[in-house]
Length: 91
Ligand SMILES: Nc1ncnc2c1ncn2[C@@H]1O[C@H](COP(=O)(O)OP(=O)(O)OP(=O)(O)O)[C@@H](O)[C@H]1O
Ligand SMILES: [Mg+2]
Image (cartoon, rainbow, N blue to C red):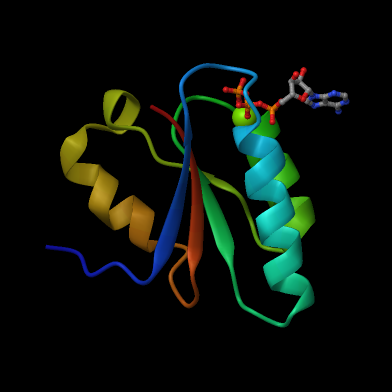
């Protein structure tokens, strides 16, 4: 079992509803306050992690059970640990 630090999941009902907009704003606001924060995107996408990285200055990552298998989700999600993690997900 992988221990995960504090995190927030930003979810939406479909594509284009604003998950990345909200997540990127939160990341930038937290980083501006001096909070160490990083993001993980659920799904095969490199554009959103790019926005996440620009907003908080730490690499954006992808965590997706279909791509990597459920067993890898915990360890991958723990990689950005060291501060709160903001995850963007489609619900
Ligand atoms: N750079 C941009 N300039 C103008 N509008 C944008 C830009 N990026 C996104 N939008 C618009 O803002 C809205 C929200 O987009 P956003 O990328 O936050 O949605 P999302 O829920 O993250 O989508 P996805 O599931 O595809 O990642 C959409 O209408 C989108 O077209
Ligand atoms: Mg998005």
